[in-house]
Amino acid sequence: MLRHVLVLSMLSLVFVVSSPDVASAQGPEQAVPVSSQSDDDIRDILIRRSLAGYSGNCPCPYNRASNGSRCGKRSAYSRPGGPSPLCYPSDVSDTMVQRYRATAAR
Image 1 (tube, one colour):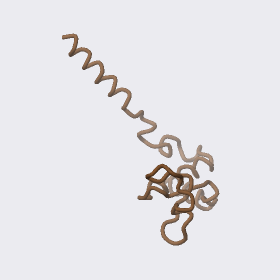
Image 2 (cartoon, helix red, strand yellow):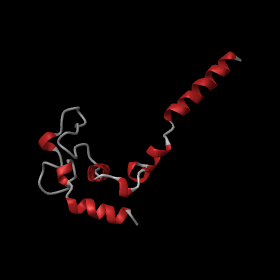
Image 3 (cartoon, rainbow, N blue to C red):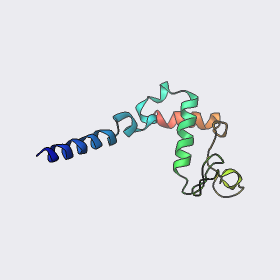
Image 4 (cartoon, rainbow, N blue to C red):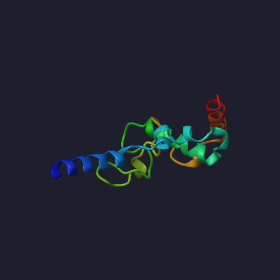
């Protein structure tokens, strides 16, 4: 009996610890109204979206390759042609921020 109680207690603890809260389940861009997001917040959102759309290990120089080394000049960001992910806030133009505000406000 005590063993069953311990197992159930452990399972419920795992469930509580692994359950996402509402804000993170929605994503930060949906949890906060676009009108109250700063330009830096929107730049972060656009960078995260860009990196999420990249299928390899090395979208940006600061990422790690599968062997644990820094990607550096092997990253997609550093190589001409092919995908060019957004890696840094300076990669996100003011026009991109305004476009995000316009589409997210709808």
